[in-house]
Length: 392
Ligand code: GLU
Image: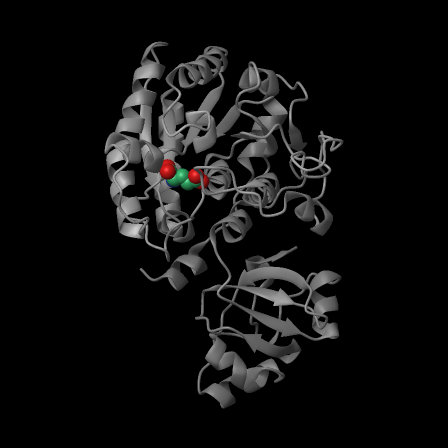
């Protein structure tokens, strides 16, 4: 089955998260806990086992209250490096994949052993971007995750680093955890890291910097606060955490960035205490299909549209027609996700294109009834259908 056919098969589904949220008696029912390498190693080159046990203890406490926990773990590469006694070899992709292959099983053993203390079973899921961008694989991954949760098994998820090449990998576990929250329809994503949260300035250089307790909009000002900060052994920094927060809150989850070393950090946040920086879920979340478009797919290119088309999209809830397209950037196929920019190059929307870039060059500016005469075929009058489009 091709990706296009899968796209055409997508159906709108009601939002399970909203329903669960209305029913729930506890603050958060389904919680994704993302643990960065820096949290699991305490900033050293080795796993901090007592700290891992402490994090598991907190998860077990929530589990006993009937809540559902999903662990998104980093650390495979760091553990593999340690296991092989820090060999003096170059940091190539294949060497890192070797470390991940060695480290992932060891890491998983540790999770299994520590959850076992509390009589809790764990199940491993290793994902790549392709597992969430391909509709059929997305549904498979989602079903597995939901089945584990139904059976009270704690899913422990990492990227499948050993096989993930540049084109198919998510690349950092912050974004991976956002995809996992989307798949799991979680109501809380907890990004635990070595920082207490998002600050008004870099606390290392500005001692008077203040922790921001709540962020409602992730705009350019907020992004600027994150800078490009990258901590020690992991891949992500504050910038990837904000990207992840933006995806997860649009999918209906509250997101909290907090320090993994803060006492009882997981249980306190899960009971609604203000710790770290919280990004409340967007109240009217995107439905299932649109979440998938938004979270899973990297745009392959962009189209620039004229003012009339921008108004039709933004104000009148219309589809994008070829008549409104004034420029095409990048090379994409029918069925790919593209971004849609206004005449001022401001990104307005993302959506699935029904025409490849090559076709669009020929039909841009034309009326829809001229498409067939121009191309010799037509896939319908619209470039991006309203149902395949998310306004940003
Ligand atoms: N998946 C990587 C690992 O397990 C970590 C990626 C990250 O630090 O974000 O080593």
